[in-house]
Image (cartoon, rainbow, N blue to C red; front, side):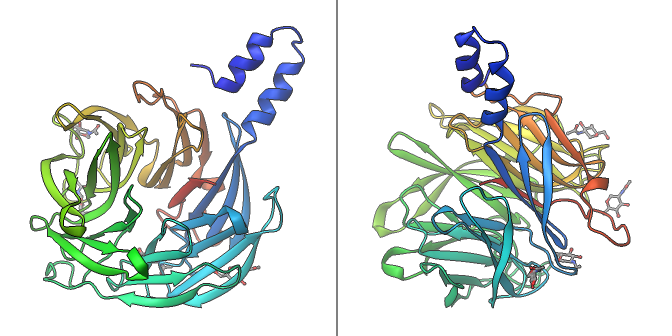
Length: 389
Ligand SMILES: *[C@@H]1O[C@H](CO)[C@@H](O)[C@H](O)[C@H]1NC(C)=O
Ligand SMILES: *[C@@H]1O[C@H](CO)[C@@H](O)[C@H](O)[C@H]1NC(C)=O
Ligand SMILES: *[C@@H]1O[C@H](CO)[C@@H](O)[C@H](O)[C@H]1NC(C)=O
Ligand SMILES: *[C@@H]1O[C@H](CO)[C@@H](O)[C@H](O)[C@H]1NC(C)=O
């Protein structure tokens, strides 16, 4: 499968010397933001390799999630090992150098950031305390904490606290679903009129451990699928917008490994990230499987069912693929993986836009020995976050 830019170049045909130049220009367009223990990187991905630059090193921090606002060239980074929300900025349009701007205090142990529809507000989900921070990010300067939402309801005794693991804005732009791993529930936040109030909670089965979810839009219907970290199950729902709130009607619950595969070690297995391409192809990372390497499972959404059907599993080429994300081109030609451990830290797979199949061989790899922070080598110190910006 050829990239559209290459097809254009090849069909021009005439000047052979023009090909590498144009190819290089097209490829340079993938700029990635990468985070791991103590470090923030930027990486240029050209379709076959990663050119990585360290942007900030601060011992003891965990920038495991970031959000980028293009209008102000601003990067917001959590510190899961502290309570600061850190702000960085690119100097100019070329986005070559990312410099530190400010730090503001919020909840401790925040692991995810999400914008509201017009990017004037940003929500932080705290795994450490279960609170949900609401930030005013409408201005160019440091964010301002305007609300802390407390998650209520019973807590799983094995977790001991609510754990807000993510906040994802729905396709209508009004509601966010916050998976609460510690309470085995999904919390619905209403962003309308700047309220940021919990308007619904959906209880899951004991030890479901919901971690990360994504929406799927199919004509006038909306679906939601969420990965359970402690259960290694993927739950699939149809969204119901009646009564001025977001409700969920369960369709299926199945193993994140599909019907035939499984982890070598069911005790350590902890499903992690999810990414959805073209409202059809669902990718889930299976971490700490005890297998030689961990894996990315591919499921396909079928609107006619509606159903979510296992298709295949691909080695992540490392251990603990904590983050997976798609490239920003229209057909999401690449899937990026951040493996915290094992040989390969940063991995790119090519993706067939129609079948959703990943290439078995990665198209680019950056080894963990070149990505781990300075100082004594500790396990799983590789990248935890990767996203094209
Ligand atoms: C940061 O927090 C994570 C998650 O709680 C933990 O696994 C890790 O050991 C912490 N790192 C440091 C340097 O404290
Ligand atoms: C790196 O980021 C931290 C916040 O995590 C900040 O305190 C520090 O000043 C930054 N370092 C540099 C050299 O800008
Ligand atoms: C992991 O290894 C076990 C054997 O220990 C095997 O049955 C299973 O299919 C493997 N899982 C994957 C996803 O390859
Ligand atoms: C499976 O994982 C558990 C929890 O991490 C660990 O204690 C145990 O040693 C692992 N078993 C094997 C066979 O590696």
